[in-house]
Length: 629
Picture 1 (spheres, rainbow, N blue to C red):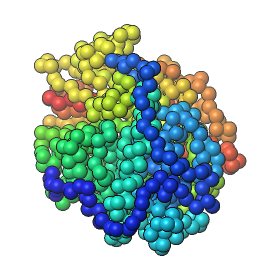
Picture 2 (picture 1 turned 180 degrees about the vertical axis):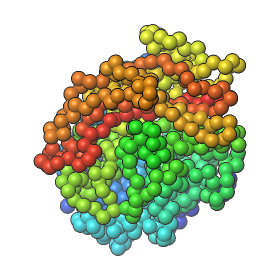
Picture 3 (picture 1 turned 45 degrees about the vertical axis):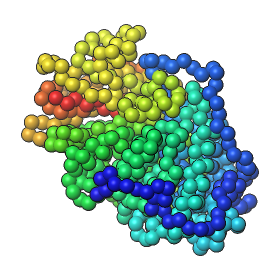
Picture 4 (picture 1 turned 135 degrees about the vertical axis):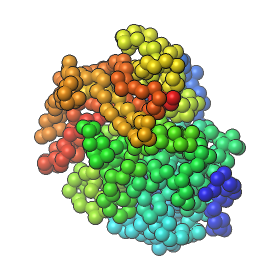
């Protein structure tokens, strides 16, 4: 275990070569004429200045929505999927609500623009695909380059497997492809594009990359997000090290040189149990020091993206009627079905964290929640009724998604991605990153639900009915991501929660609070409480369940009506099962009424029967509030 050791800069473990490659915008954005329809850009972007009309900061904070997991053609796998069109500039423009050309040739646009975004192209082979198509580059002659340039998707997939083999640790990377001169030039351009599109008060960008550790094709990926413009000379690649501890060292060293930076793990669901194991990379049990390092660096965790949700699974939460949501359990690169291992899911990690808190005095799994898309088309957080896929030619249109069979991926199992919500004073890097650090964040399955969640000891039962309730909640309690300390008496905590629907999506079905706790014998438990229900429904005293909200979806037309559910729900809830001596966590989950799934919209376009499930109930998950005696 590298426990704070040195990783040298600027080389890291990159092999320096003398390839005489000049990284320029022309090289990075030019591809063969037969592959690209849009003209290459030839001038460097300029950083924008703050607008004089920048909105006044709100001390009670606003909800901002954004994307923290996005790939463009500068990621080697995206190019292998035949996404040759979207560079970071196009990705940011799409996130802001502008039209861009998709890999399917059509002009596409978001239904609702975002407030912030981070392009997280893979550090592994960053920008190399662009050199594979430049005839003046020595890399043009590489056999893998010829495969990547081929119009045959099968050739592109073969190139992807060859390159990803080194990332998975199955082979050594070609030194020419990981040259520090090459990667450094691309990394500089990544920063310049982020600067170009960052407009304080209007749209926020973050300099970022993905560290793609994939030992034996198991997912341990992290997105690395920087607060500002002070960043290391190079990103760290998983070909430098597959070990999360070495990524933490990179981040710790960057912080020591003035960078504020965090890592966001994602897709625990396809980690094959590795993401939340309680041993380090050498198989040794967590120590207090190790747990503290992890807690300090991995502040947030992604709960859903194109490759499914990581909250929980039906086999792990048999009493949770909403556990079977966007389950994707297929190994990267192999298509192998994965078991629903407890150490692959967030709720189980939260429970495991309570145990580690008890034994180590530190909870390494005390992370907040975000969501992302992991789109490799440069199209941030696709929407179910506006879904364009996320893997290039493989799922570029309804025909490819629903009727073309793939040996390694059932494309109907892909989700339509997710969205991160934050509560921040203003739409700026400083304010939003501060929200990341304090974990006042939540994830959605793509919907723009606005949810607030507070915990305290003295909230009145009618708190959420007051116009000043948010100020009171901040003054007298803690927001999502916070910690409750026992005030010295035995009364139970109260939680104030409010949710407002996405104006362009379904009404709200219910608000739930999910509780986990560690009993006196060291055993963990969980329970889901329905705390606010629409349409006057109530929880059945015998079954402990609420009746279903209903379903207005017409599968044949991919339509629904909002004549059930509620536009807004709010309540104050007191834990009826509270034991002041036991560690616990609480998070809110907001559920919409059923709406058509993206597969149903596609099926209607093709005139075929929609695959099951034809509907889904979009949702939001807040960061928890923890109670520690």
